[in-house]
Image (cartoon, rainbow, N blue to C red; front, side):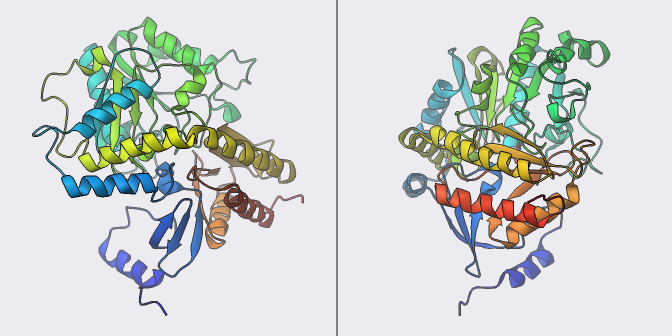
Length: 439
Ligand SMILES: Cc1ncc(COP(=O)(O)O)c(C=O)c1O
């Protein structure tokens, strides 16, 4: 018998000491994790299709990353980059300047989280343009601080009761082809949703008062909505025409998830500013803002920064992540995972009427569940049941989306093909257990 506390004992303590606001998707407490697997305190083993919400693309406890963290921890933990500088910050910044899309001079700023990176991208765009307006998209998610919560599209649970919100944030429809807000169908639509930006300026905010358009290449929390391949180049052309900074929030899509280092590469677009976090440091808190040198250099000395931003241990982890990606050809692995998972999901769609849509790029795939394929009534309760089924059968997985009816894949990209099929089998069995199954 183990002398470790049980999940229930820890849950009782969690409920006694921690507010309910910080949500918990499963009732389990982790003991250790490796690759694409997690073991809880009772010795139960789980396959991980959530990756701590897209954070461990290089795998849990990636050896290279752990070694770099240990080495740096023994040298120094913190001097504050603003007080005594250190090489890992400079090295990682240089690498990201090289690796992000666009063959132009760039600079990188490090912060502590995705939300903080979004906040800083907005500060920089406003300073550079001397304008205030920020255009974001329906179904977008950008964080939980005042500004990023304002920029986030979904009211419950993210915004409800937390107003008033930050000013000068405007929201336009996204390219949600499965539920097109314009009632059109791709490709006959002519990408009306992208061209709509010009009309949006008439009724919402003038282009000469707009600092930035901030877009996720694929909506993460918003349901893995994946715009058509022409979408972002149209949006960026309109931004360029009006001197608006085009910002890509790659917090969830970045670091190989979609089969490319950055998802915007699929769209052939070179954003002015790229925002990163999550898998950049494999579990340590690190956010990055990489952008055109002339924009990044604009804010005055002391206008950007923070006590912990670009902590040396986090930067060493980030460097190890980039080394591992190059050595292991991780983007190709993500593409392969995507091929396997997509063909399994399409097969499930053939046989199970609940699966209304299968979408995504590389290993960032979502299946949207509906009660009726014609009316597309969201199957939110069924999705909850499916997620619970997966958890109870050893697969950690997350839902997302406007209606909470999308199942998404964020597995570590080091997952073996056997483990991948094992996880997909659990999803399939779960679907079979739900209503609407033909097989
Ligand atoms: C696209 C996107 N932007 C920003 C954030 C906020 O990141 P963080 O939770 O690190 O503040 C998230 C988090 O899920 C995200 O998915």
